[in-house]
Length: 287
Length: 334
Image 1 (cartoon, chains in turn blue, green):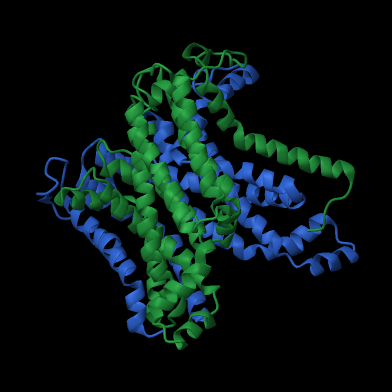
Image 2 (image 1 turned 90 degrees about the horizontal axis):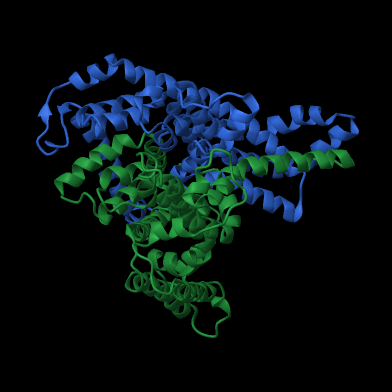
């Protein structure tokens, strides 16, 4: 296909992405250099780099960054481990039961995240099932504190995305070279040894893929934190996204929020650049 | 892996899977249960499993006033809805031109949605539901339309520019939403489009476009080049060959991509929340039930959550294969 024809086909898409992704990004930098509230959206006032330096000196910005890092550190390894183990178990089942399990396991991942979080929260309302269970088992009242709210956010994060890693690993297991497994069986390898020396190396590239995407996606966790904290500063459980959102909507500092959004992009570069590099190499090789 | 054959081993595997299934669905079951309780039962400190079920939460959510003969109306509307759905499912077996049947069924569904507020005194939740349908449908149509063209171009063009577009799309997909959404607010204000469907649709198309073109491209790559080349030899232009020859064999890929676009548009919260003031979609409308002191929010949130989940579960039941295939293809999520 010639370049001219390619541009004809890809043109509309490229125009939309340029106008609504490249341009807004430049605009975010520009708006970040202004003082802007909801009252002067169209006549923002130039303040230079003040928003950026103010954000960097803001203790709560770093606090939210810290909680986001904690979230990634807890949730991503859990997704990988639980997803892998359940995929191995599911691989043992065949026929109708397999499809049934798979449909049930997928539920938390496909429903509206806001709704999933509300459902999760229903369990911990004063009349909730798990709150009652917690009080019966531990003989201690369940309260919304910084610690419990943060635990709930982490717990929900694990509950919500594990289906994704599960399905990816499950698909990976279907392409496992059977002759290798059989050969290992003849050599007297135990099940654990087969997993250790055949299955895990086989899914290594999938793990890398999951790792990169999981980190990028959990870096921008928003919906669940929004519902579980109600943006209450008492819980000190803001993530970067919710704190930026709060700065924009509650404090009405739109310029500052733009600056913060731009600054968070720098954080994502740590995983984004290796990811882009790998994809680039892959695409060039494929050509 | 080779299957476990020992009886206790298999039992343990099923036990573990059943436990994981319970862990996956407990929030759903509990919320569904709460949604059919009277407020008094729902707010009891010790969970009640024996109670008289009621639909009053759903009624309060969807209707402003109770009609005189709710059972008859509900029966009639449900029947019409089921008939139209059956028509959609069994369209292949109707001895008429298939596109005519599909058209009639969809037209019927739209008419039904229009008819409901004429017959019943619907509450604002119904409007949010309609908004969600409009936004989701609009996003799917525009997104898949321009995405198919681009995905095809990217699958067939070997030049460097194609790689650059793909990698750039990947980079933009990874960036935090707020970096776009806040400028969108500015653009929307400047064009006086805040709170309009068109702004939400076009911005949703844009933020989902990277994902769409990657996924569609991967499906187009599976189609052999000879297919359109033979058509082009016969004198058809590339665009004609694309529309007449490629698109018909691409349907499974288009359906899978449309399914993910549907989920992304239906689920979006942050973008809609910032770009609308009253024309909310369901996620934003439902989030309103989470704050506040009104005790009724407990059961209303439960009923709203179930209401928003049912359509998605229906869609997924029909398209489970495409969903799993798409997820496994890996290009997905976010």
